[in-house]
Amino acid sequence: MEIVFDRLEDSIARFTLNGASGAFANTLRRSMIGEVPTLAIEDIRIYDNTSVLFDEMLAHRIGMIPIKTDLSRFVLKEACNCEGVGCPLCQVIFTLTVEGPKMVTSGDLVSEDPMTSPVDTNIPLVKLWGDQKLVIEAVAILNTGFEHAKWQPTIACGFKEYPVIEVSDRCDGCGDCVEECPRKVLEVKGQTVRVIDGKLEACSLCRLCEKACIATGIGEESAIHTDSDRTKFLFIVESDGSLPAQQIVEEGLRYIRNRSVDLIESLQEISTEGL
Image (tube, rainbow, N blue to C red):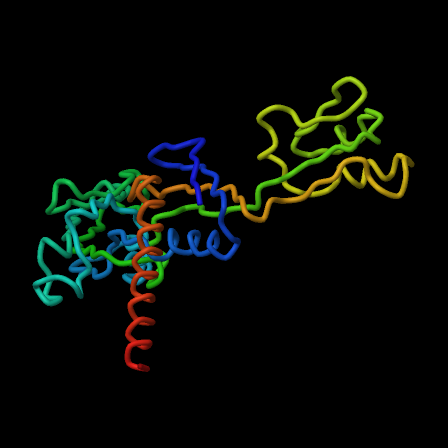
């Protein structure tokens, strides 16, 4: 199995997974979405809220704010030495005290940990008028998207089978398939059609090129054929900013490895007990 990145930034990663099955590719996708832990606000104490929003609506908005997360500094609450009581190793406390008139944003949340803050400081929460006030204390903890979507580190995370386009020697270069292609993947070159350099991955496997070729009357079979490589997958991972995209991929793979090791050990124990 091989992973090759063709784009890698803090916010987005695009890579090719080669030599794997569709089941493994989907496992990796699910791991990155639901098993990579991040910080998110879970408990909120509202001491004063005279805004136009109900407490529940305001709490939901605050809970969905992405928070920058350093996984080397925090542990899950159930795994912490404080036994779930709450300490700087498993939680971060935010406070918010604002009086109107003002648009309250995520930037108004004050963290007790200077290294932990909202990813974006301009997320609007509620608009306060002149006589309105908001006083809140919020607690962020580490968890995974399997528990709730607010802990998902990804905005978009998906894959597709790698496209394969073959043009036979029956092609006469009429160009009908080129005009029909919605992604502009093809071009006429001499007396035949070929894939434009660097555009193959843009193919959506819609097969409109095949239909256009058959419609020209060359024969019952298209001179161009599209298929997919079922052992090669094109991934795109977009981070919400809580973790770098590369770390999301690494943590997703690490989760799969750890679960595989646990499974092997369990099977070995069962085998030993059977003997």
